[in-house]
Amino acid sequence: EAQVTQNPRYLITVTGKKLTVTCSQNMNHEYMSWYRQDPGLGLRQIYYSMNVEVTDKGDVPEGYKVSRKEKRNFPLILESPSPNQTSLYFCASSLSRGIANEKLFFGSGTQLSVL
Amino acid sequence: GENVEQHPSTLSVQEGDSAVIKCTYSDSASNYFPWYKQELGKGPQLIIDIRSNVGEKKDQRIAVTLNKTAKHFSLHITETQPEDSAVYFCAAISTGTASKLTFGTGTRLQVTL
Image (cartoon, rainbow over all chains, first blue to last red; front, side, top):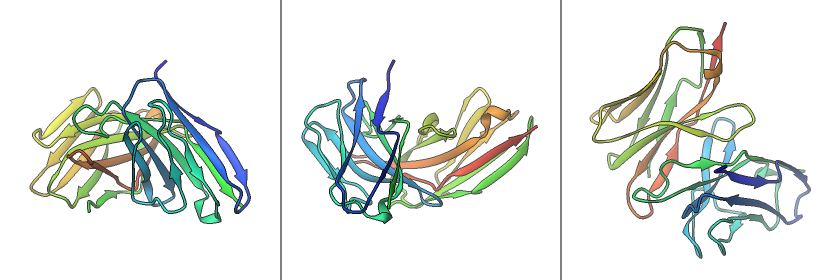
């Protein structure tokens, strides 16, 4: 089944404790991206990757890191989480033929709480 | 940069009625407009999209209209059913190798029996 898999689904952590949210897609997609969803703000892009070893900042990259060492994986790293990073996070991917991020496939989300 | 405004933020309709969600965008260079549906506990899912060279597109009970001059586009759902209850997001993309997708803030649609 074609899908984007995120783990974990729920995560509670404390301020300053490094964490990684994994994302993997099995559709051989070139484009991958991370979004955060907050009430009243919709979906905001954190980082995106056009292909392996190519990453770039989105609208809200502060406090986050990503890497794209393999085509299928795009982990989101929070080196020192803070309470304002409490949010619902989504990973997404697309084939990227023509418009890079059309027809996005989203993962099921990771609800992160930073205490 | 692009700014996408979406209205209303919540919408309640009776089963069988129609629902309309409206979005406006600011960047005249935007030329691709997708709509995503997010069911409770799930990630957004693409339900319909339209390109700027088309004024209207239909897929069964859903349709999207685009007015490039006014820079607004709308999602129309006819004969609503309880399973249409979800949060709907509009978005706009300005093409290019670093094309940027900007989402609206979402509309929570509730279809009541």
